[in-house]
Image (cartoon, rainbow, N blue to C red; front, side, top):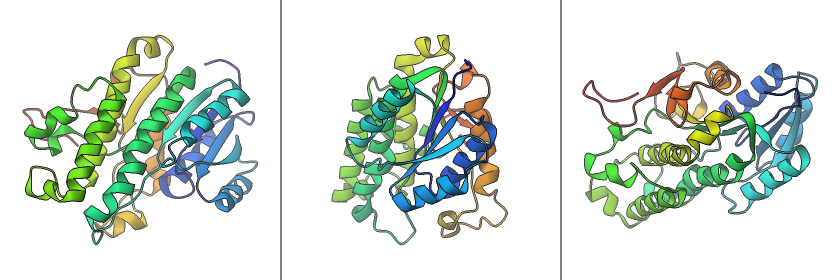
Length: 286
């Protein structure tokens, strides 16, 4: 790292884990550094920036809907014009799904935000990372091939481009929408293929960039924050004893702010440990 001010951005950061990451970055970075809180509610963005004024780094709001096909590129270009690049990006924006949601009805916008939003952020911001930078995709331990039928592994394993990842996600989305996924090998829980698609995107981009990035101390990785006590999790599970978003954010902040561990590059990391992408002989990952 150099002595220049650092620039960080967190997508989907007006609540929950995203907001905890913004607050943590504001505390742990210096007063001359800048943290961008982003989301779709302009009023909420302004409120957060005001509430966090004086807590450490400067907090600024930027309107950012990851489902907008053009916005990631626009915002990346804007920040590069302002600052010469970015240092820390957390792709955290997510559309949540509940037990009563009809998978056929929600999978279109769900994939648009969670998957195509992820690949848009990767395409737009990875080229703008400065030396020592980090691009972290918030995913899940469900995002490994251990949770997918072996016949489907080739859909997400060993892909060469982000376009190929998008194509595989689109094929899954279409199968859910037309109902064919429910009579085939796809998991019924849409979160599983979606998270696998996110991790596959990270692995695919990292494969292209690994040598150059590690030479510049740049980290691209996916991360599992673990189970958290949030309103969304509460509708699925008993999370009364689970960590809060503030508590869960600590490991994610460490991943971006600590020196790069090459073993974590391009991988899915939980609590500092790499989770196996492919099934092992010792059980499932995560």
